[in-house]
Length: 333
Image 1: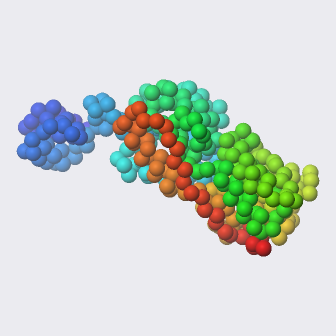
Image 2 (image 1 turned 180 degrees about the vertical axis):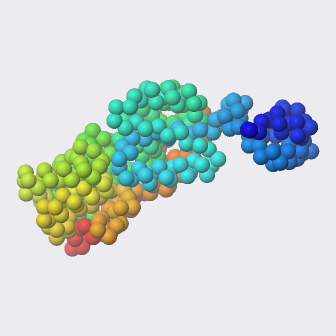
Image 3 (image 1 turned 45 degrees about the vertical axis):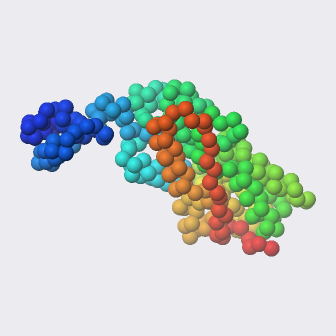
């Protein structure tokens, strides 16, 4: 049988309201009464209902965690870090999957029905309009891995994707590559657009550079492999490719090897993210690391702040990138 608040009150010899106050943070209760209630609760094995506490305090301790593209292995790392960071703060994640044709309006209605304290949109490919719609619905929201602009409508925590493109260009130029390809993710994704823009800007300052542009249908291994297979059959390859992310790069690597091309001897590759698989021996991918841990901690802290304080102007928090040297680019010249 489930132990109830009434059972604890009877065992402790106090009122039910005294038990409720004991387990309500900040509520007034004497030290003597608190000791009696806590002793009775321990003897009975009572745990206060989080849902009932939410009704009395107006705080559910639920954080909506919204994402898509669950097929990308990087999300497993992101999901693990986010759920642990949320739970370490005594909160609970409510996961919402917006992959494929899931109705975003229905997702917002569900988040409101569960009275989440705040929402973290953890996606770089989900339309920025979703986070804005959450805010318009009265939900405190943070867009992790979102696009920082001069006219922010919601807070953003992430990295400068234009700088990511510039960093990739500098790495390729330093190794003597002059015929350079961009194998991006979905063409409509803001991350794809910004990384390509940074690559273009950096390469434009150097004479004699050729830039080719192509796009995978998604941030997935199969999409990267299909696009690289198409490039192999349709035209001479570039000397090196900056890939939209690591999983696209690993797909491209698979296609190149299947076609008998050696990396980096025949074609160089540089990825983005530094997902765990990028370091595996058979992959050994040179890539650009974005600091997932720091982004996630900052996103959770900002979500908590927003749930407690309203009315502050949206701000962006951009964290630094790091080039990770492995084995898919030739040495610097």
